[in-house]
Image (cartoon, rainbow, N blue to C red; front, top):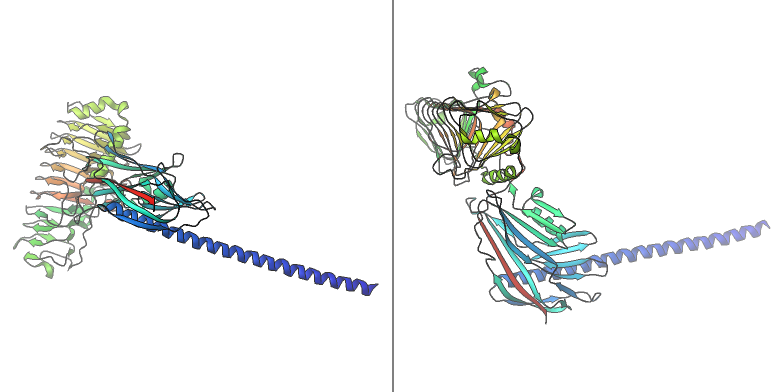
Length: 587
């Protein structure tokens, strides 16, 4: 009995072993078949992608030609009926909004359609408006980008947005094999608008592949400029570029390569202090070293002009022969710099520190668009209603500000005009203050002043509309713009690159006059008259400094952010929109 049981157990074991081996073999076979099938699917998708990339290339070539015609081999699998041309697969809108008026205008409203091919597993390839898109389930990605472009000339000027919109006509079904692509028409420009200065340009695309369009828009700009509406299947792009806004690391940051900083009068001086520690007056003489001047062009120093710190210059340097003009720190210059009169390469008498050809003057982005953006934002959403009477007094120059007080908030003003003895207090105790000034700022009279109190920041955006021959920012003789504790990082006045700022005799300004220009343009003109003083920094095209002018650089600015958003909208000069109509038909 025991032997028979053992024999049966052995048979069962063999059967089980055979079964296990069979199941394992089947499993291995199935895994192998699945892997092979996935490999074949990937290969087939890659082949279809190449078909659509070739279609994209040929359609683009035909669209940009005068009267071209090409044949494309649409070698598609026979698993589905055909590729489909859809006239209503998408739409593109291009709008512009005038910053000053807030008026919006539609520049383009165009159906873009698509040529689409879907596989049995739901994977879809599509050609639309010059791009190729791939859809897998809920995921859409861009395979080939449309030919939109944003360019500037070699000097960084004339920013131009080019938008070629390709539309397709012809057969609604493309059954595979040879497909004829033929030029029908080009409408260029799409409308009469080609110059769009002072406008925000917005592109919006409605498409089944809106996620892919959003991906493309982010490549053109950045995340902050792109929004997605999933319910309406739209992707929207505002033309935005990263702002080039390094920290303010010098008391004077001046001009373009073709400009000059003249320190030719007696007692022109640049030194420094640190308001994070104490006000300027509380610093000892030795604590006022470490100032800095950065000039993209030339520097001319005469008489007893003094920079108590470093000088970085991209052009030529001239020290007047026999003068006591001095740089107490180091002199960095470009390799092509030449020196006139006494050669400072030996150090004293004109340069106490070292002299080296290691200058690297950083460029900065003009803030015209940044000003426009914020003026429009504040115009549409502000705290004016709660302080209308005070704002009327500030705008009118009626001697009624004794004082006028504005607390934390955003305020839109036509202008700021303070007359004799007027005082405007900007109280940041509760948080920052933003002022949008559509025209100009004019602080008149010997005892008129703007006083910033509290610990938060004041941003002043000067639009300069209708300024005419008047400066966009002016402190009259004896007028003051001050911050408690001489804290320059709390006071920022933003100026367009073609603006003017004037500090008249004995005027004092605390903060940053921020008006940088482009490589070929020095930026906002800044004029300092006799005995004028700056506690902070000035950026722009600096007029010759007059007698006894002083710039006290606040080293606390090295920790301050010049532009308080991550992006700035550039001033777009030219917009070129064209529609290319192309016929796509089976041969």
